[in-house]
Image (tube, rainbow, N blue to C red; front, side, top):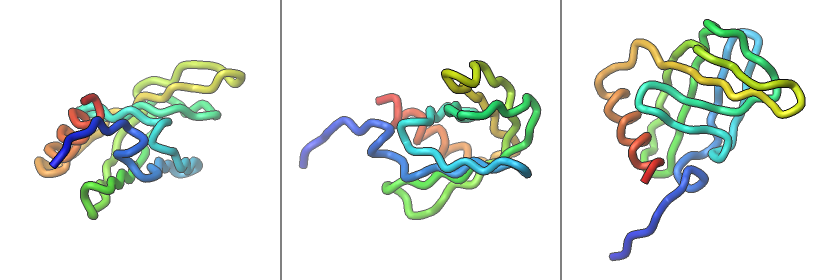
Length: 108
C-alpha cells in the first residue's frame, strides 16, 4: 500500500452552489472547504446574508453532502472576480463530522 498527497482537484467532483436567483457549478480548484463553511470564486457579486445551498460530492464517499448557509463576505471586483465566504448553518452532527474530515483532508 502506498500513500500520496491529494489536492482539492482530486478530492471533489464539481460543487453546486445555489440561491434563488443564482446557481454556480464550481470545479474543485475554485473552492476551499473550511470546518464551518466554504470559500469560492465567483464572476458575480453575491450579496452578504444571501442564503444558499451547497452540494459537495467526493470520490471518497458516494453520498452527496447537502449544506445550507449564508454568505458572510464577498470581496473583489468585476475585473478580477469575487471571493465569496459562506458560513454553513444547521449542520447535523454527521454532516459536521464529514465536513471536518473533508476540511482536514483538503489541507493535508
